[in-house]
Structures are given as structure tokens and as C-alpha cells.
Image: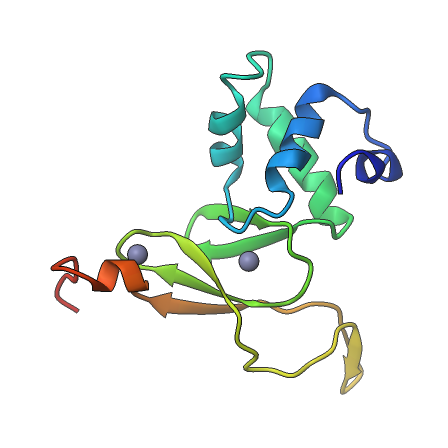
Length: 139
Ligand SMILES: [Zn+2]
Ligand SMILES: [Zn+2]
């Protein structure tokens, strides 16, 4: 991603936008816009939440970043363009990549006349870390 991506998308290359891209690059933690904002704000005091949202919006539209809606009311972002499963831990509320392929579908493809461009698979449960000790609350 980084610089060429911004140029390709016609976005002005600002230090803030570059920082957003750098933070997303290779990021497997699926940050929300607020997470990104809170992380970069100390380093870029002039950064606004609107800039974070705008930049993410453009990246999502361009297909550079995927929006994940595994959490109710919270949008998370993932720079990994390859379709993969996501796992939401109901205890620590972290979103993990789950590298299994329940569907062997190459995108884009056409299925029964529908042009399928991408798909999302969400799994819910308890992550390995939260299964240790007595973290497990009643089911
Ligand atoms: Zn957990
Ligand atoms: Zn992911």
C-alpha cells in the first residue's frame, strides 16, 4: 500500500494519511476508526476523526481495505484483501483471523448469474487465551 496507493486513489499525500496507511499495513488486529485515531493522535495532534473516516472510506471503496462488521455497532478494518474467516471472542472482544476455508470460492466469480466479488465469514466463540484460567463465564 502506502504512497502509491494514495496517489492512485487521488488522495493528497499528507503525513496523517500516510500514518493511517502505515498503521494498517500488515495489521492483523482489525482496528476500528477510533482505534486508529487514538493510536495516531499523540503523534499527530492535528489529526481529526473525520480524516480517519474519510481515508478509510476511500480505501474501502478502492478495495484496498475491507470493512468488517463482526461487532454490532462497530466497524473494523482489515488490509488483508484475501477472503478469510474472522473470529470474535465474546470475552475479550478481540477479532482474530481464522485461516480456514469453509468455502472454496475464487473471487470474483459468477454464481447463478450473481457476480460475486467478495465474501465474509464470521465465527463467534472464545479465543485460546480466554479459555485459559477461569475467564470463562457461564455460557
Ligand atoms: Zn479472548
Ligand atoms: Zn482479517
